[in-house]
Length: 341
Image 1 (cartoon, one colour):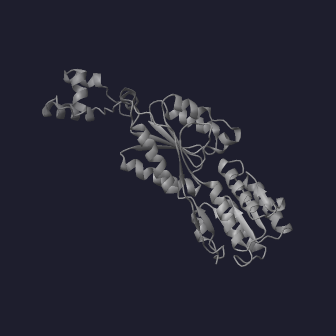
Image 2 (cartoon, rainbow, N blue to C red):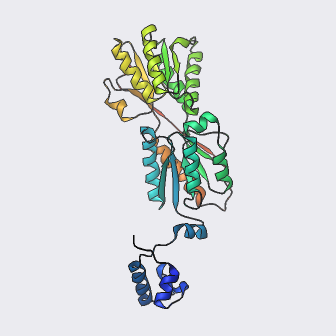
Image 3 (cartoon, one colour):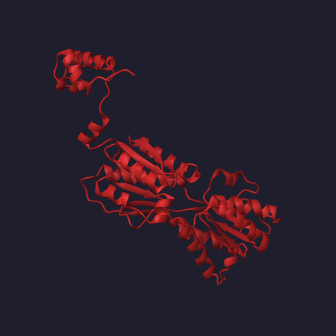
């Protein structure tokens, strides 16, 4: 590997001061064009690279945002990332992305790695393990070190920062009510995300809709898990032992599995089994019949969160209170639900 030169080495070899080299490399008007060209070409020849960390510590700004996603395979987070990337590019910011893979340890490591002057702030959605263990100290420590955070989707009230969410409770209430208005009486509730804050809010929305419509809760058709494998076995048992006419699924895996097993068990969809899922991945549109879903507008969440963080970074000397922004969802009706009259 070619050895990298330092400012001192360049200055010594060219017989100028370190200050002159630094100003020439930063294109300062104080240095003549001839001297600047000479120093810049020599620095390139000697493979000079600026010490980014040192510059960041000096300038207190990197124009770089750290993004921590819990699961890159989840189409929702991929959509959020497109929104983050769009606004960051518009505003002249770079992005460094880490995947926590739902691990508290990896989440902490990513923040420690990037919060030492590498990034100006973080955009993140909390990992499954952090929520399970109710551990958020690494976020609080980061904010106390003057590195701002904006959380999206999976958030916690225990951290005082800006947040961007969808109204999971109200969206679930509306989706369940839509199934009831379609004539469904026995609506199964399916979830593989019961350990997440968003899963709990969506479950509450389902119960609220039943209560408003004076429908008794049937625990035999409520399947709440935090494991896909555990869920698949229990769902087969549910179809084998229960008769249902509707499904409200809190995540895409639960929705797709419900539609698949419904067809395998002889249900006609949507004639005698209506299904609504939460999230709007590519499989929702490609299934036959296509899946009606609550769309969370992922790109808009990413754009909003990024603007909030950049506004906070560019007004550091101004006291601003933390706020929570709610993005409205949309029920997209496809082939798995009947159109209400």
